[in-house]
Image (tube, rainbow, N blue to C red):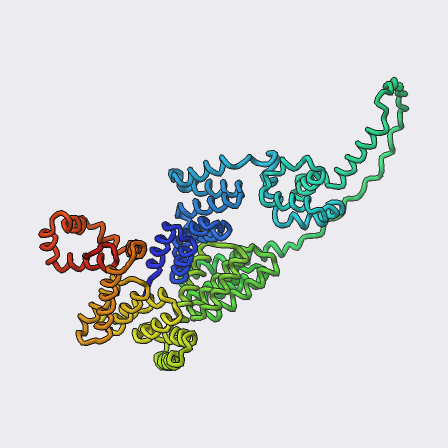
Length: 584
């Protein structure tokens, strides 16, 4: 069974080979097995960004930072994704956040230099809000303005609006269009910068045009009319002083009750620390009686119930606390804490599905990194729990027999489905995986077949049928050198096995026939296929093997002596079977 680390390693190889979709697939499998590992999100973010999916890259980078704020690469990934999205200011903020924690990190410094170099500069320098005002709600604000709404039927105007949303810094190149100037003024006003509205701007422009057309350009300026002296006005009679409204009398008992409730809570806290839980509950009840609008007192009761393993009472108290908090506008953070405690109680009860839902609700109230990590751990725990709960040897045998029936009827698609269900029911049954590999070969999924047969061999290394199946699959994948080894391994376990014997003879004949009858182009293709195998690459990097290969031409006697070594001979035979070394 492949682990999350195995999938990560495969993802790294695919990423280095610029097979970005394949890398994303492997990293996703790693995350499915271990969703709490921040490195997998970081690596998948890099793969998404390389593929050009910056939004997905940003999502994974954010998750990486949430899982481990002390991981420098997370900030680099986030900054790079925002840079690709042309959200320059947000990108700079991400890099700066990282440099605040890791001032000597060269990758963060380079990323910051890169985005600052590309950035054209903050729009007009009026306010930090200017660069973010053209967000998703810009279209709605334009549609609400009576005059701007009329412009929306013009395709050119709509194109400019979309361009402005993608790159707010291009506003400077658009202000020559009066309509875009009006849009800019309206957006500034919506940001609370107290700028003129679109209607005010239009009125001023109309007035200026009217004044320019009505005033003759050659008319002399009239002399100023003397202003008459102002007539002294009598002192106004003072108006009778308005009586100030009498403030409502304060309820002198309320502050005392609040003080008393806080004192009762503190008393409960001290009792809780002393592990006097019953007395602590009584103190919290007293606090609730004095101030029933404070959700903190109810949350504290929930903490006592959780500590004493009374999880049902804890869940009930958390629910009540959230209701009180919502009714009295308690801080979002307090409501989120109550929901998180409820999630932990559900986790202790074994109800992981509800626990995950509680975490999600807590995140909607107020995002918290610790809660996010807890939720990912719960999701992983739930997947493992569901997998274990699904396992049943008797039902696995039923599914296997159903798959056998479909296979005999040549309905290979249904056979694959039945065998896959059987594997889920009995994941450590090598025979079922062998059958699944056979069915996958019939639908031409050779990679899937090889994966399943390798798991079967890991489960039972002495399973001769699996070695024979592995050889057959490798022949179909044109990996004759591997098939040769698989058949030999099977024969070493059971020298009388006819399938392995026939397979070995067949693949040997194929190798010999190919060497004698292949064209130069076919030989090159076969050699290129062999060179893609990491095992072949490792053999060719062995200095001793390279020397022996040279000796075949320069010193055949020495090469023949070296071939007496079984290990050396096996490696040379693999090179021959792979088409790397030509004989005859």
